[in-house]
Image (cartoon, rainbow, N blue to C red; front, side, top):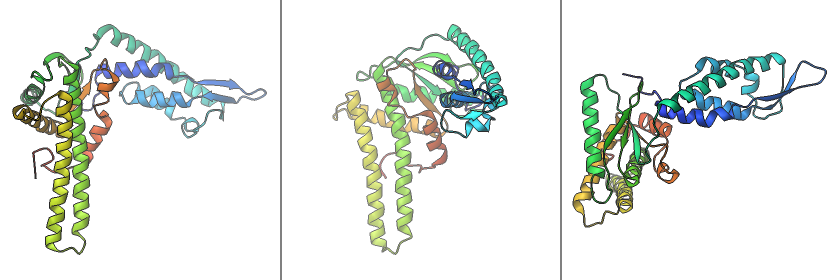
Length: 308
């Protein structure tokens, strides 16, 4: 299988479309010298660092970023030697040329994304059996969550992304995409809240507090975490239009949330379609933030398993 952190082709397409126009490096000769004044380069460096996240064009990007005299400055207008200019403009032209060719190729070969679609990164897998199991888990969670009269969702496979562990799914409605995003953000926020509560508990345990008081504090902290989860679950139900009287549907959301939480804890990720409205996209956490939180903050096994 591909590297688990490989960026999908469609995301590379989005990055190149947004960043290639920003690769502007303007400079002028200083009269009477061989030095040059750099008029604009910070936006170029920001664009290069963003493109570097795709894993593409590492030779050209490394060659540009090796020029410390530029990288270490924060303001335009610095004076550099002609050699520095040459060391940047050569690989920059190659980066621009190769980037345009790749973007044209991706534009010609990738179909437009449906608005009501998501991309799903499979958990780290080693063989076909575990791939099949992960797909079944994703399908079961989504079926419980979006195949109902409130969300009016659908589940259809659009494509597997070549060279990565990503697949694209059509979910049938923007509400379905929005609810998935809210659940993924809730999973991340519950992990953060769980770690916060656990940290406060450990700090209190080191203080000279009686056993009865400690027990009361522990119960209060557990109730705080449960209330946090309840409020977030209620917000999701309200957005989906699920009344408090529909206990079965709310139980299905709870099951789907726990299933998706387990998948995310094992490395799965969920992203909205690039064609989805900004309002819906904002429901999803940033992939880098989600990856960092889930990898670096262990949390407890009871995060989304119901009441303590």
